[in-house]
Image (cartoon, rainbow over all chains, first blue to last red; front, side):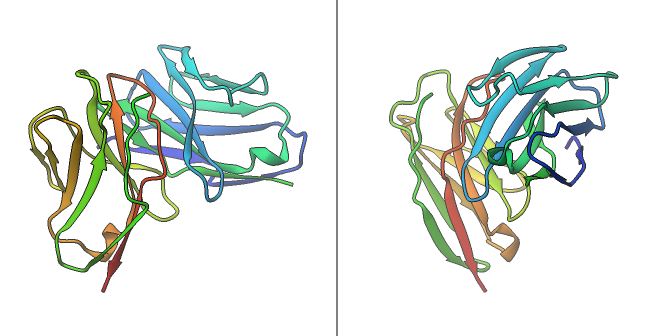
Length: 110
Length: 109
């Protein structure tokens, strides 16, 4: 089973600040996903990324969000100007026959 | 997205089998039936998937109705570590996972 790590495990930021969440799959994979889960709510799809391009994004994934794979290993989700409602758990997933999820980053926006 | 319907919650005694049902009456011929679970404070975890035939793996079994409009995830011997929210999701290929509210399984010691 592929291993996926995410950093940081918990990020606290002020509203309006930029945050970068990182996902590090141990093996090389081409297909990545970001999901988020607001406390007490469903897991929601944000974006999928294949071969260094966004393949699909949800309506949540607006201009404040971006993804990239800067060094061929890390896979990052950037939120340019955080809002209170961005507070959530953010999960990265990779595709290796099935989707395998990381442990998540808890983002708290104050 | 094809929808699934699951009970909100279920309880089971430890070391007994658990049958988690899922209805998916609008399933299309190419949809695979996937099950994921989410343990407390963790990310979702793949459990099992199937298309038409029943499937077994080290975690669970999946029983699929002949008309494919329903399926049942079977945990043969529940442990306390199986307490989680279980999601039944229809999926084709590399599509995104669309999570519903799932079934919250409580295991009674």
